[in-house]
Amino acid sequence: MDKFVIQGGTQLRGDVTVSGAKNAALPILAATLLTDAPVVLHGIPNLADLTAMCELLGDLGVSISRENSTTLRCQVQSTDNSHACYDRVRKMRGSICVLGPMLARRGYARVGMPGGCVIGSRPIDLHLRGLRALGAEIELDGGDIIAKTDRLRGASVFMGGPFGSTVLGTANVLMAAVLAEGVTIIESAACEPEVEDLVDVLNAMGAKITGGGTSRLIIEGVRELGGVEHTIIPDRIEAGTFMMAAAITGGEVNVRNARIDHLYAVVDKLRDAGLHVESAGGGLTVAAGQRLTPVDVTTHPYPGFPTDLQAQLMALLCLVDGNSAIIEKIFPDRYMHMAELLRLGANIRKEGPVAIITGVESFVGAPVMASDLRASAALVLAGMAGRGETEVRRVYHIDRGYERIEEKLRPLGAKIQRTKE
Ligand code: EPZ
Image (cartoon, rainbow, N blue to C red; front, side, top):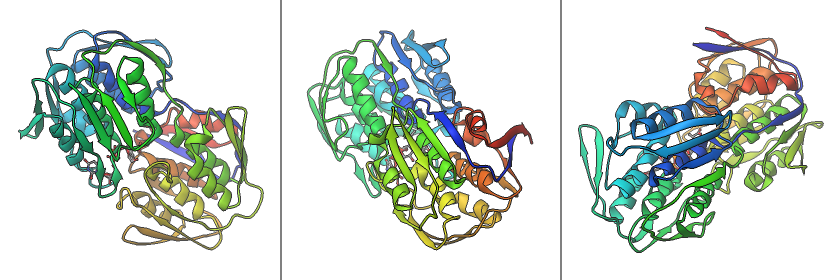
């Protein structure tokens, strides 16, 4: 296993480029199951989660070849195997989004039922309810979801849940509805840019969807879809992470390929805290420069502040003089990073989903353990801002969602090395 060894205390300065969005690429890769024609995708980052998705699609009969470092060519070659086994789904929960397209195209899908995970309970009841509304017969057998249909039929489907609309649930039902007979209306659809990117891909393949990026998707089913060539949107979470890296180290970084229209809530909070954030030349520049002030943040579905940047923001707020509050509304237990930040000298109290952060002068380097993808990013940020040496162990978590993060941070001045544990 690899670890990062970080010498803290340098201000990050310079330009860094954001890769394609993992969470857009995952469902879009699953959409390749909807057609026999070739699908060419540009801007696919080299990430462990996407490699896992490609391996799963390989099991399901999709041949995938790499045309260059960021372009994949995908085409269904066989429909003999429609079983996404638990071992695959367990390692990468995004693989649940093969369920909808496989059911729609093949009339049958067997997918391992994902369990809980370290960021909390991750049910899929809304996915199943949506597919049932389209007429799928669904049962559980041996820990697998078995979904069958003669032909799906359009219906009204409500995708809101106790913590807001579900992103992958919306993607799953949408991909099933594009080949259903008649009109489907998805109410309370997730509005995340990753869902909108999926809508754009599906429409370019011949689907008839209106309302992408809004909470009401109207889908007129078609009999078949064709191929497409598409470039994945930039990763707003990677962009936000680099913005916070500039902030926490007191530096100035131009985050290229960051889309401000995907990051308004984040930009707003960073400006509230006293950072200078400017949109220029297809990117965002973040500059520290003055004393920061505490902020209160609640995570919400898009366009609210994203849960996927909550851990990184917490690391930043740990060094802001005064009391800040974070309320985690999407995954109320997503605070695994807190214990490790405490090891670095942070002052945080938690009451249920609310964390109160009292700023300290500095982090003090120590060995810490990455527990999940975004928690690991928070620890890297803390290590770069801290005094002395921080070791972040189990960096395979970070490799799931950040493409060679240390190679992107080093040119900015970060002292970060990958070594064997
Ligand atoms: C997506 O997960 C992302 N993953 C997550 O990013 C992200 O944190 C999450 O959306 C929220 O933005 C991918 O896109 C691959 P949800 P998803 O269904 O779709 C509840 C990362 O770090 N819910 O939108 O699985 C659920 O428990 C990852 O890159 C139900 O109750 O999340 C949560 O409270 C981690 N029933 C809320 O809805 C359901 O059937 C939102 O979850 C489904 C979800």
